[in-house]
Structures are given as C-alpha cells and as structure tokens.
Length: 273
Image (cartoon, rainbow, N blue to C red; front, side, top):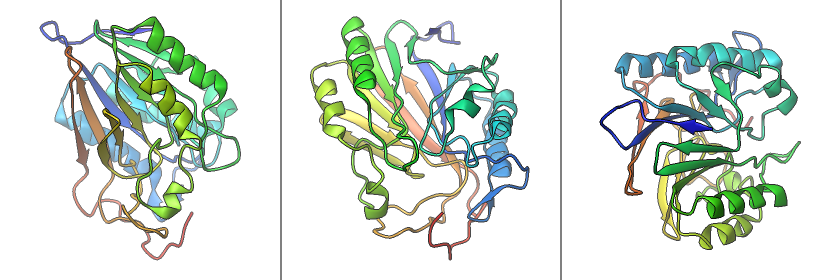
C-alpha cells in the first residue's frame, strides 16, 4: 500500500498518531473514572479544530478495553472526522476477531507495510501475546521486518508496534515491555534505514535515541501513566496525541499535543486496572 503527500510542493509525509483509546461498547464506559469515548472524541475534535493537514493516521493498539465489536465500531465512527486513512495494529487489550469485524473499512486499514511518499516506508508489527499484558515478536514478525528492510534499503523506515521495545524506567510498566527485545534490535542493527520506532502502551510521552534510532511513545487519548514510577501511578497531564513529519533526508520532526490541562482527570486513588 502507498500513501502520497497531500501537499503538492512537499517531499515530506505528515502523520498523526492516536493511541490507547480503550473504548467500550457502552457509551458511558469508563477507565479509572475517565469516559474513554468522550476523551477520544475530544481529542479528535481538537485535532479537527487545528485544521492541520495529515497524510495518514496511525493507531498503535489498545483500541478497545472490552473486546467488543461495538467498541471498534465506536473507533471507526470517532475517527471519521479526520478523513484520512487510518492504519491500526493490535495491543494487548485488543481482540483480533472483533477488530476484523469492522473490516473491510473505507478508512481503517490493517496492513503490514506501507510506502510513504517517495522516501519512507512504514512497517507495522504485531507484538500481541494473547492473554497477557507483555509483548513479544514472533519469528514471522521478525522475518517481516527483515524482509522489508532488505527489500527497500533506500527507504527511511518507521517501525510501529504496540509494546515499548526499550525500558521506560517504571518498574510496573517495564514488567509489560516487549520481551526478548534484543531479537528486534538485532534485526534493526543489521540495517541502516530504520530511523524511528513508534509505540503506544505506556500512556506517556517518550522520545529518546537508542542505538542511533529514535524511539517514541505517545500519550493515551484517555488516562496517563506517571513516568518513572515503580508502582502503578496516574499522571495529572491531559489526554494527547502525536504529530510527525517525515522529511526526505531521513530526518523526523515531531511534537506531542494535549487537551487543556485538567481535562478528563482520572481517579488518582486507583491502585491499578
């Protein structure tokens, strides 16, 4: 599949990341006292109000919280105002049969590989291990990554997956990281074209360099996890999203944006979910 730049005078590709929506079948479904449908819709509305142009939307998992087909239908309805094609992949909370129930969709695509403009490619990996919160990449997924990096060596590469492939410094979250991540990094190290890795899962902003590759995580559209906390803890920051621009020379610029401070505050007495 291929995505072209919507700007006739630009070589760059602009992406919008929305992640960890945790939607329910009921419209009043809440996670840690946050109505996840309302917060998701508020994020979409804020993006629309900005009136920015994007070439594609990416959603990096945990779309649903309750496994229902209706929760994915709510995502499909909620993402519609953004108009662009949305590429999604599963997180640990997702249920693939229910995800598939809304496909084929005119807007949502579940693919493994996308050519982005003339200079970039995107590889979408499935790190889900059914029934557990941590992730792992199967031999098939590692082979997919190896194949696309080898097939398009001239293309700068953005890799997407749900689980964080490096530790974030929170003991409780790092129990649920991408297990055996060294296998992933061994594939990446063999190639010079991976410029960035983008994930969800940790409900916080992360943007670091690891072995010369930019690794980013993005705030959830609902509750936020407090960084660098050994025990489960929620942050006071508001729901957010990430905007990225992929430049023809392999550089990447990005920023995280959020709803106004104080929006959709969770129950800070919660001990987990």
